[in-house]
Image 1 (cartoon, one colour):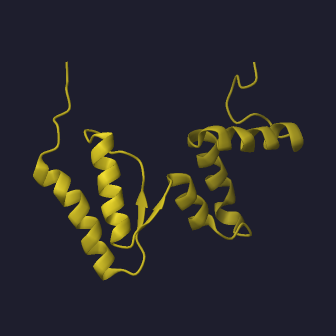
Image 2 (cartoon, one colour):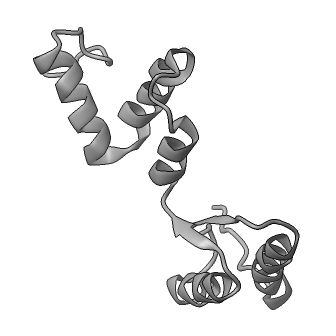
Length: 115
């Protein structure tokens, strides 16, 4: 049975130091609030607060994705973004799937969906 090793104090510290150093070099840093594997919830909270104090903006992965898309007139990336949202963004993705299938009459994204 495989057990993931716990991060060392040095590894934990480097996660924070790396973000703080990036903030010194860039005016904008977006920090995902997802807890990395092997880190405790408490460590993640403390690390996020420290990174916020240094000036980072905490965002979810969905917020970042939608910010990258930003202009919904960009048709070349719209379908790819919506495919990611439907597959990986929980209730928001289910809402998008519902709108596609029930409102716009599109076929379900997954085979067997709705059965």
